[in-house]
Image (tube, rainbow, N blue to C red; front, side):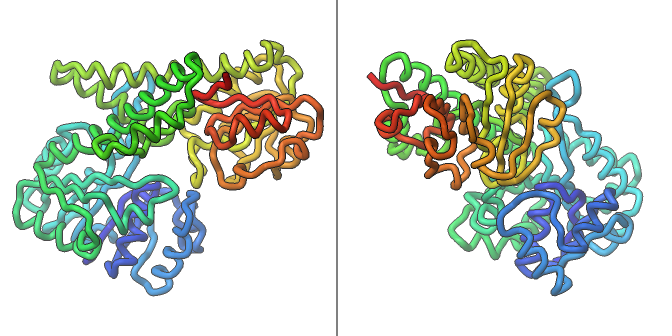
Length: 435
């Protein structure tokens, strides 16, 4: 099939590359000329394992192209995917849909025959209805069928999630269009995954509901970790004992920092904002959002306590600063408020992350990027393991820090408290306290 992906961010680029790898002809469109230039040179703007190799293969075979010419891309395609960002509006909680509406207006401007317009962007209930009205206003509604097809790609696992999805959700009441979309996804839905057909509003809500539920699991286990620390219980035992119940499942039951990234924070807030429109309360989701914000403050307080509230001139190391491993995404990462606080208190902060220097941290005083774990940890008063990159799982802290008094705050519970104690390291973790 001939596909157009409007937006070459995380969703658009990964989806476009993977669709081309299934044998489709895909045109990826973006108004950022520099990004298009880089993509045409095989350089990807995001960190996603395996993506560059798949991109180059399909680009070479001419199934995948990149352009800023949206008119040409729309005219050459049968199915047009809107894959632009929907960030939180400044000063509020609602999703900013201006990029979605801009894309729809551009499509309406150039469309001249029937197309299927698919929203892959995460959008609130009823957004598809608004898009239909845009095409109706432009007198192009007879050319367009608007479909909701939310994505469920995890950063760092996106290619695998696309090829082996838990489910493919398509929202449309048009039987013919539904058949076309099912045909598009046939190569991957054959592989034991499920194809879910619902109406358009149902598909829009499935995405928000899924993210809100996963965020709830994270906040739930984090709050239980607080109890475990007080009661001398290992939260890992609780996670295993709960997760083995198939009704609950083990995923997203790992205690640690507050959830972050491009989806959970903004989508939980946007879902709460949507409830105002329908005069409905989602008290559980409301509590989850509050709990997650409290989590950030709690981690800051724990860090301060480890240092006996004597932070000025202390050398503090962060190992990993992204919100999760296998991504360079810093959006809503817990490291940001922690580093901001420590910087204001006069600490000297070094950080090492496999994905390199972070502009988000450059605005804080006395914060320095290290090119290696060794350089970052040397003579540190406190080492904070923020992100569970594989290269942090077998470190010799005595050798790295090279001083008598070693403090490690393991936000990911990578190490054994008992083994660390035997080595004479002052070890602090999440939801685990030695009796």
